[in-house]
Image (cartoon, rainbow, N blue to C red):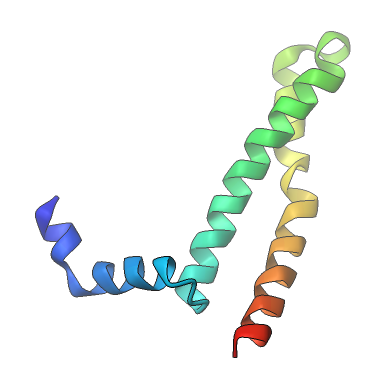
Length: 87
């Protein structure tokens, strides 16, 4: 674990994430994090909305698929706007 944290590339990545720098790598990391969170939120929303009608498992799967449909374009647009504003 010590080798990973002292690696110059990982150290630079952690520093750029902490300093709110937006580049290709940090943008991809934030996109992946947002996709995972939106999948979890979509699954929870699917269970709450259609759990009794479709079954909890199917509604969670469908919610997990359709949750990121609106989030991914919004995150990409937000990252582009932030990048333009910061530079």
